[in-house]
Length: 297
Image 1: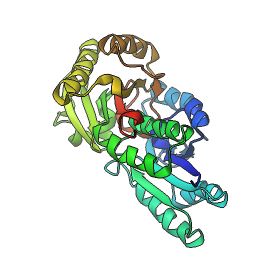
Image 2: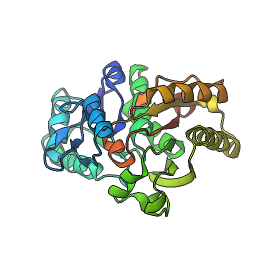
Image 3: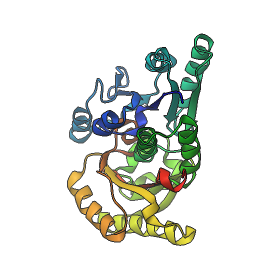
C-alpha cells in the first residue's frame, strides 16, 4: 500500500497541535488588514496580532486564496518522497481554493504520472473542515488506505454541520455576504444572526439579541438534527470554537457537554482569519462530523 500525505488549505483552522500530531500539510490563505499588503495567515500574521487589530480598531480584512504555486510548492516534497496526496479545500461556495489546487494537481501529474492526487471539496470550513482532516489523520495512523480516507470524507462531509453565532453582522455586510444570511436592514445591524454551514452552503438559522439565548438556540438546532435524522450523537466528533471570546466559549462548551453527555468533545478550536474576516470577532459555535469508524469498518 502506497503512503499518502494529507493536505488542507489554511481555512481548516486545525491548530498547530493537531497539525503536528497528524502530520497535516497546510497551504495558508493570505490576509490583508490594509487591503494592500497580504500575509500568510498564522505563518506571517499570528492570530493574536490579527485579532488585536480587529478588536482595537474597526477593520474589515480581506483574504486571498493560496496560489497555484503555493499548492505546487506544498505538494512537491510529498511527491518526491513517492507519496500519494489527498487535499481538502474550503467549500467552493466560499472560495476558489479548490480550483487553484486542481490546477497544481494537473501540472504536477505531468512530472509524476505514477502518483495519485485527490483534491476534495470539503463542503465545509474552519472546524468542520478541521475535524474532517483530523479524522483522516486518525485513519492514516490506524493503517487505513488513501481509498478508505477518500471514501470516508466524501460521505462524512454530507452530514457535517456548523451552527454558529455571528459576532458582528457588519463584517458580513462589508464582505457582501449578508444576502446569504438574511435580509436585514442596516439600521438593525446589532442583531446577531445564527448561521448553519451544511452541504457547502451558508443558511440563516435565526437571529437573537441575547447571546445566552443565541447559544441555547444553537444547542436546540443541534439537538433537532439528531432528533430528525435519528442519528446517535456519540457517532460524531463534536467540538466548539470561537474567534477570540474564550471566556464565553468556556461557558458554552460546558452547556454543550451537558446537552450531549455521551459525546467525547475534542479540544475547542480557534476560528482563523479566513472565516472571521467575514463574520467578525466574537463569532462562536459548535460543529459535528461523523467519526470515521461509523463509516469505514
